[in-house]
Length: 68
Image 1 (spheres, rainbow, N blue to C red):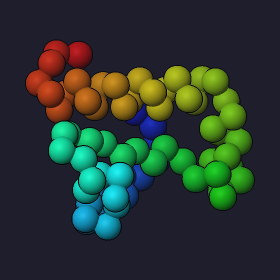
Image 2 (image 1 turned 90 degrees about the vertical axis):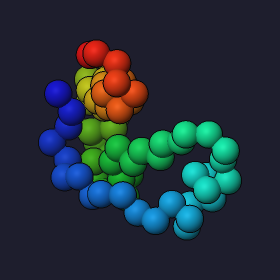
Image 3 (image 1 turned 180 degrees about the vertical axis):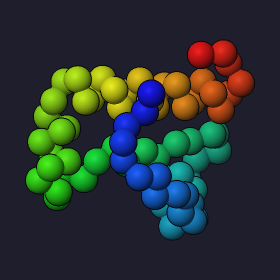
Image 4 (image 1 turned 60 degrees about the vertical axis):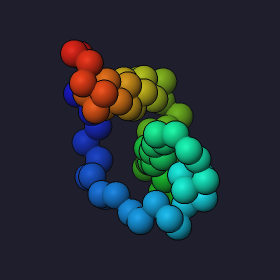
């Protein structure tokens, strides 16, 4: 299902210590920006957070090859 947010693509992970400092597969997900009033309001909504969590879960399962 996912969210309606535009995919902003991947960035160079060498700039992000949280990703470059690990020896395992890692994911950094930005779901919304609290500096944006509309997105901040969405983050306060339980249904939106559930939708985002489900989209992340589905994406990880799809990447790993598991059926959804």
